[in-house]
Length: 417
Image (cartoon, one colour):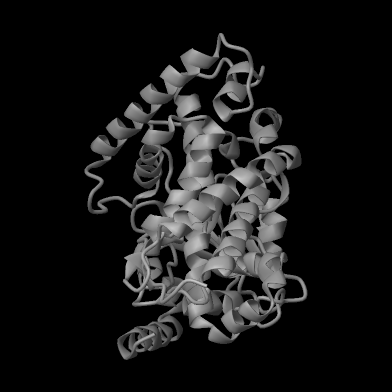
């Protein structure tokens, strides 16, 4: 990190500890773009772990910032409901897209069950050689000795290939999935994404494309892709179009953004912690542990929101019926009382899978094992090819307090093995 970056972080820390506690508002996209949210979360964990603030656009909400409190909320869908929205932003009355992650049992359970065979252990065993072959082709195509964008050439490419396979989506048009994923998660006013109405129009194009795929498969024999599974499952075969779009949005973002940002995060983490990179090179058997540590360290989804269904006494505060309750996974994964030395990146931790990046309880990420598989495979293939991958500048981070990720990551590969 250069001097300017250190100055920005020092200033953020000074501001986080000097401002009145009640003025701290962590759902600020700019804090995540500049990677300066950490001291604010640190102070909330220490001084006000169940913290009420008011977002300038989305109104009042509670921030849950400690690991065990997050687990408690995530495990209690009776008092903390997922219905309606999983982000601070409320759904647009004119553009509602129900999805199973934003539902409670029993409907949540039935719809989740409809698509879960796609990421079953048996299907992952089938997918692994395909993912490995594609990872090898991607890595073998990378330039040597010149700077390129790792996000575009590796992270997006591998995850989009896998997502296209899960949907049985036309492979040559797979970058449509990337675009739709970015449209879904882009912050309001983000360059290149137009107005809210223009973004909604793009999502309706997404729906139209997938409706045509549905129509092809609904009368065909059931197959193992996600669309066919939804066509033929009792809980999903009669979805309204906007509910179909909602579940597509969930599967596209869940299958694309989170894994791609952790792949990029692994390059950044190892470069920022060269002792850990040396440890990995000396012992590639640490790759599975490194993958879990990176998922914790990166935390690709910064938060999830619930809505209180009753008045609840929690953490010494009175949460009222209808209040928004935001679980900050990104903070829980840095909680000193739950994880030893949590700000450090340690690839051989004793319990590397102790994190809340995938959520907890009934909404735990359905594709978590697929994410780990892709990360493990790409690093096994990297280690066979490249003695080093060097970071060539600061990453360009996504301006979002929901998707914690990267727009660009400049790297250079000096040589092949």
